[in-house]
Length: 251
Image 1 (cartoon, rainbow, N blue to C red):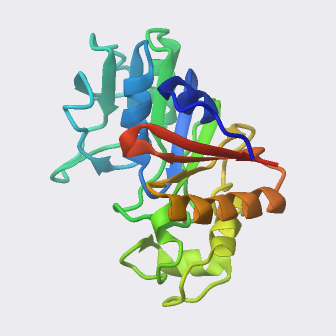
Image 2 (image 1 turned 180 degrees about the horizontal axis):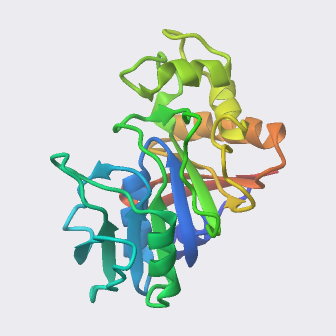
């Protein structure tokens, strides 16, 4: 276990999100993490998604641009610019294609591109469907997100998106309390947090670690996940709403 000084720059570095193309998957604070990383970053940041999502918080972005088609590559003029596809769904924005995201990145106008690569319907835990997540091949880092608040909670639709899938991946049943070993299986599974990550750097994030008892439970999850796979070498514990790095657990 390695403790890092609690500075915002350390949080971005720990997550492998200081620059480049970073995708967020899972559940339990993907948008909060995107906004926190954009605020921490000193340069120009682009935000986008490959799936439908709730509209961007205009207090967290300087500009929201709707991308009309493949050739629409307007860079925007704000420091933090969100790029969205058109949609007829109220209070939602559409995701972009890989080609559209590539054009935004290749424009050279941003030093960080943050992409929400799946949906979770505001739940705290999820397992991906067969077609998820939609991660561009040029992603540098993938951050699988999970909320520490699910530890000890009963697995149900109230906290889980696709609860039946979660149960299958982690070896639990619906209405069973989720233990640290369950979450570790999700983070280390090729059918869970590691699905479709390709060759990207993977840095799992256990979010919503807001007190000492939760930190101890999250640390147990991280240690078990690291023991179960060699695909990643660290797990970050944080409270992203506070932009606070709690711990970085390593082998």
